[in-house]
Image (cartoon, rainbow, N blue to C red; front, side, top):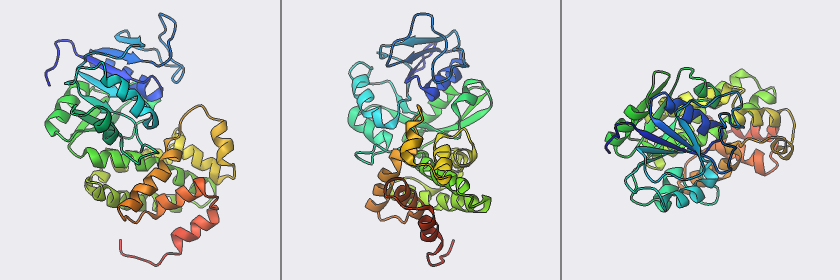
Length: 326
């Protein structure tokens, strides 16, 4: 991978996180293009998902996929990544690395994002960016950090050098599988954490749920080719802490309302943003079952979301199991 004299960073997807990453990477001084599915009037500098943010001057909004770039950040929801990446593959130079910035599992296949890209963009260098980041704070330039993982550590190191800024600090990793798994699972756990608080079960219960989730996700990471130790880092514990405690978390807020007694249908009907954990939960449970991994928290959240499981039934399922070693 050779860097251009003036790097070009392409961001695919202009939701809140895509807009934030366009702002963050613009601070490197690179030329940044931000792809939008729906056209906007010429001269537009603010976008619907982050209306209080003005795009930097070196960010160009476009409706055309890039043909070349130093790196492409794929920031579409995981459920649309297959379609978008398939179309992007037809025009993008095959040597350009693509870094997925979405978190979750493809619902129909239980595949992680890079497994989807392996099918839609075969042979291309790829990576994953994940960490404890709320979009609005990154867009404002507040201090934040994340992990960028590739199977090829040298590529991850080059990409972190390209994208790193004084406000958005990146750490390289070669555990792309573990980073993806942690990013997908934390959305499911965040719904469970929200339910715990919304139902009045207390802070002790939430702390226990988050801590045991680390062990649960670690088992699943190892079973799918990752490392349990990755769960101690930004993509694991860091993201869990933020997503399971911050009211800016879409998944946590869904859980809060479920715990307070609202139906999932009513909650989702009142929202314009995507809570990935709702779709990821059954796919994550299927993945755990496929690999014969004990995942009681993921199992319980999935049953609450889709099988009419009550909070009292969930409480008994999790707490009345025989005691085990930590």
